[in-house]
Length: 405
Image (cartoon, rainbow, N blue to C red; front, side):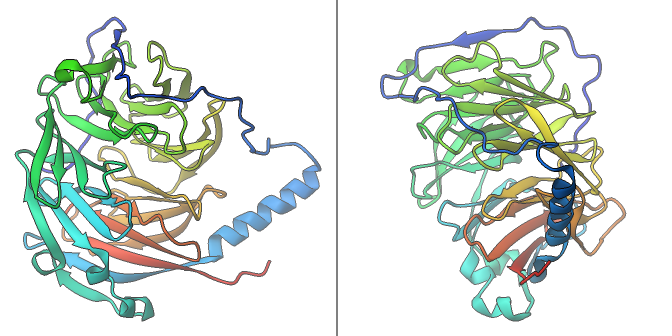
């Protein structure tokens, strides 16, 4: 298999809902969930005329307040093939380093200051090669589908999920694996993430239809929870813990739904997000009260995580069969995703149409943008990195304009 392609499961076998919750380590402490004021305005309240005017102003502002420019291009030595398809892009917690992974069985680490020096902010486009731009790389035993920096490790530990169903952690300073789990029976791991309440606790989602949660401090290293969200054993394509100190973990599945679980009691989902027409490929928390999902129906959706209410849908990109990436810039409320027409799209959370689209140079009719990642720092300026199915990285800088409406 060359690219990150999704195929809808054919006649999945019925499978009874299974759940197993083992005892958490004594070191794990999750706070009691408090009643929260979601702080989101319900549509239709207040003056209809005033609401309509405000909405129009927001739409106009979203379309013109950001200017994006291409600042750097990092090319692959194997351009034109699928042997270097980039499936994941992750900024480290300091926002100074970028990690990429994919088909090439390598984790590449880039120093952003080398890829994007200050001169790049003044209109210069840097043309680089992976060999010269990459600080170093770590060879992996299998193709990679997921990367995630481990919270609390000071950017030293990077977790990965691979095509062989294995979860591994790498010490990026020593360039060696330091942890390995094989809980999915050799079925592909699509997603890995870590709890922000207790960063030792991690979770993975797989083609085997389960979410596995583990804590290495537990006796024997056994997993602390196994949950199968779909009764038909539909593959789990994405897992993400709420990064705002809540006990919620979100899961997206091939059964066209996303689910929310309380990590203290994972016997049943506490939330269900039902609205996509095809496989849910990504889930991303935008803030403490909202979450974005992406699916192969060519649509992003914004949800209220307090009551699973749909807030807005975003359309314009093309996504029917591949994993094309999804990333959110929380400071600016922007969403980024790839597309099967070889373009990268940016949406403002307030407006359902894209506010910016950029096409990659096509090296073939089947090329597509396969991964995206936002740098989380900054408020008046942002950085978006996008990767293609040909292994090319493109780095974009966005600057906020002075808009008067």
